[in-house]
Length: 52
Image (tube, rainbow, N blue to C red; front, side, top):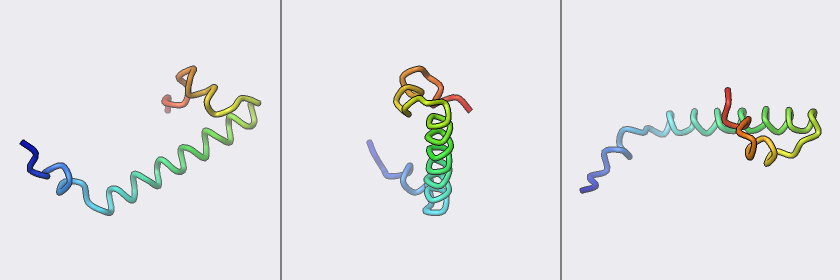
């Protein structure tokens, strides 16, 4: 039964920080992919996109 606890546990601040992290991470990945001459999906398909 879904009681909405997962929604209560996630505050707007935490969600905002998480989105900022994903945005900065995405920009870094796109910048590195552009420098290496590979499209972003190449890194995603080869598993590099999810490595820190």
